[in-house]
Image (cartoon, rainbow, N blue to C red; front, side, top):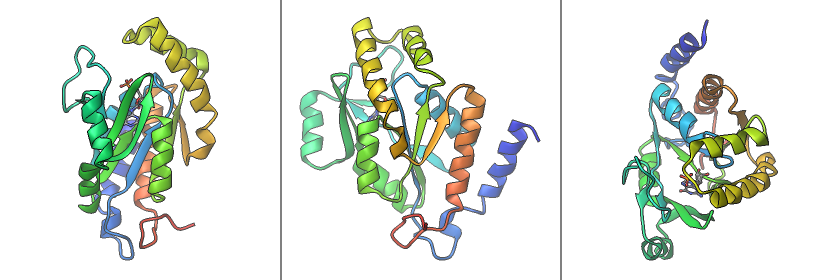
Length: 222
Ligand code: 5GP
């Protein structure tokens, strides 16, 4: 079976193996978190995964970062002022948040909670500090660290992407070094060397987790 056939095969199986159809589970959706350094290709694998895996939605984050050319409000991010972000944070409307490369990023809480309680699986693509907050607050969340094949490949990717000044790239690389040391905190590692393979591994993780038996609070059984 080639990769496409395998994905199709597993996809069909998942139609009747959603956790909320199984006796003894919570009826809630699964929370999947992609984390890893900036420039590793989390966004690209996320989009490919969403195309391939049914019944998986992604949360749109809020950020104070400037909008890049081609980015759309409400699609890529909700772009906020620092004041607006601070208001959301003070009103406890964020599930997690972090300061990254001099900007704030956060996950709107209400939307994600609504999806999960409706039994929909949600995907967050966030940096490492935020992923650690999710890990503490949502013990049932599945945390996947997306790694680069090498540190050099990360540098090349950030330079090639050409969305940041060289000063900002240096900041992101320094942060990446720190983040790579923290991968052992998470549940899975997927190396993004070949995109097709990375997406396939991620799809397998999603399908495996959908079949996992959980406790009544949504936590995976040992
Ligand atoms: P970028 O500015 O390149 O879009 O994103 C910078 C970093 O922020 C990436 O690692 C991205 O995954 C992360 N990020 C995006 N949204 C969120 C969020 O809601 N919370 C956290 N903690 N990080 C986020």
